[in-house]
Length: 476
Image 1 (cartoon, rainbow, N blue to C red):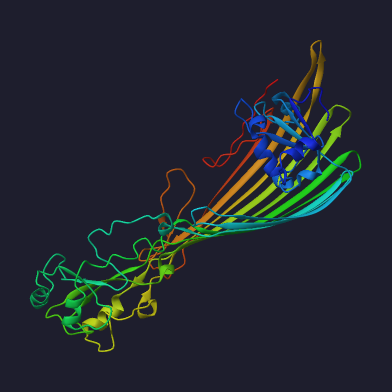
Image 2: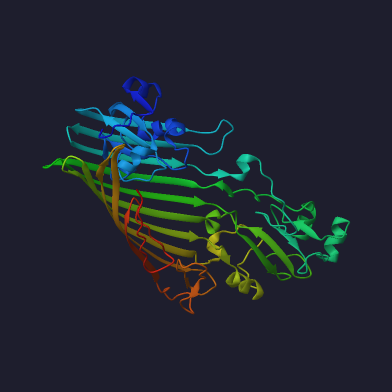
């Protein structure tokens, strides 16, 4: 490694294996206390003393491929064009090296509930300055429900239940004088009987209202699934130049359940098997948890390019370009519209049976709330570092950094029973109406930000609050 500063910590292959880490990501978790700078900065990583295109280039490398790990002080970070509040972690890889690894992991709590598994496969080949690797990963976790943690919800004053409860149209009034006589007290709320809809059946089932299913299908943690693939290709070029191309693609889906949809139906006297002399209100849950679920799908793609070389014997240069794109779609269920079914009850339709089995097919599903956002980021950075002149106390070293950064954000949302809206990432912005009809498409709006920042010992800066920025500075 091109530095005169000795490492603060150096681990050989035997030391690394003693940690029991399967890859570099796990190894860094164990080494976090010694790699994090006391000045607050996160560490920077080198491979064989050279800069890398990003952490995705090395995160899947097996620990068996590491010959040594060196942890160097913050002063070394300046020599490679980084800030002076970051420690440097240099991985020295075995050469040559070939490996194909597969890892399977299962996890679950001792008290039941959420469980998951992870399957990962890696291929790595190292031959001198040339290296390539492929990492494939699949991960899945089940949902954690409130009932699995013995959470009991307060039912409140609205008596929803899967079988149903009835009350007077004005909640708190008497349901029916004849029914009160049959049960021997003033009946305010009554459960729907399991079979039969005669007054005697309701009287036989009379008791505390049903309160079930309030915590069923409510998640504390969502069900998640993640699939990813990443690849790295590194080649040595003439003139002691090394080129690295890395790419990654990650797809993640999560689904959260927010309970069962509740319906409040006004059942006229004598309709749908109602034995009461006046209208009653029926409160029921539908056993269709997907109607109130919310799902998020995200797809992220990354592409990086690194060129690293020397100018003469003392100056080092590197160029790092990166492109990232993240698209996220969100679908939120809004339940059911009871208007059509209620119209059938009001019309005295003899085919309706509000006290019998009900499914989602009996009602009109409300359109889901939809939201979409796409974030793209382009960045490029060129770094030149080396000694400017020699002083009695040593070399006067400088780092010159030139960078450009551009970010775009496009988003739209479409909400049930409201007009579509579009949001922009401006500070203090609020959603703006894009259409007066839900069936219309929401207009896409976007804000694009860019910055070009030449500097000395200062990394490129970018902001979304202004259309452009330039931050030259100098530090010796």
